[in-house]
Length: 405
Image (cartoon, rainbow, N blue to C red):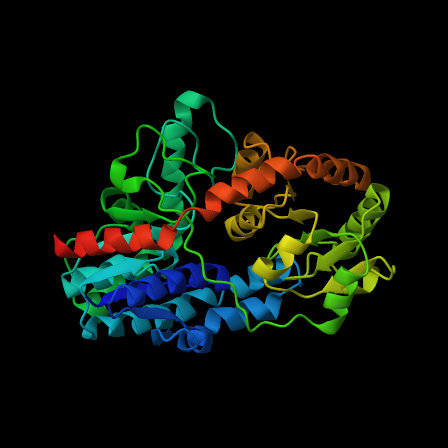
């Protein structure tokens, strides 16, 4: 079988698809991973055939990294021509042989490439986005609606692609020759086959989902045994009790110095050392100068989080998954999107205090860190359940089953 995997986005969007590709390869298949060009060395290191896609979007993101909301809005004006070039790269994939297409909805092209090839398409979803339920509202719905409106809230997903629908319709006709029968991405995913790539211990399938929508478990890469921590990080971890990890990933804030000061004061109030990961710039390195604080840009979560006492983060599902596997309690300061949803799930599971929404103060954060430390036994117990899952193997079996039909 030659499955074609298409994903677009950051490493958090690509790495799970690479994990699935490795699983398919180990099962005797010949997967091809299509992803932004800069991830070609990562795929090559795992022996996975790679099809590079336009990654100008990364250059655009890098240009506004840490520059605030206004810079992001200005950069958004350049998106449409970049999108067309990305779509054209995906149209070229239709010249390949494939038995099935597994696509990230961010690609905006995956199901149409499968349509051109005449093969089954599966949406690989890292968060619940398209399969509606009455059990809970859409994770990206901006407010929590009354329970009777839960199912209706899932219509918001269609708004994600709406600004680009005209571009996609034109591209589909011009580049793929598919002039009739256009359906929006949201409709194709909702009525098609999906692979929900998260742990059922984090979020089980609600009763009104079909069996085909039950989550597979996380698509996890093996730990990178070749990664060596910088000497200053290794030394810091060796010189005292496990610190608090604080990192907000790709989230940004208008005043990183103020947020950093709040975090540092919270660590002092809690009596804990801290490792701060600046990421996209929500935290600012220059504001931290204490001996009991180490500032880094980033480090592999699978290496670092098992070595900390508490993980303070933004609530992105990739970080949630890494902290779950590490067995550390979590504190979530959500910023946007699905982050409040995952924060609520972690609190419900008893491995995190309530989300730190609204105005963040050092006193609130310190209290949350203290509370989280008491939840460490529950976090370790849940980690054992998550470790027993093999989400990649489950997903491979479903791809095989669909390709045979």
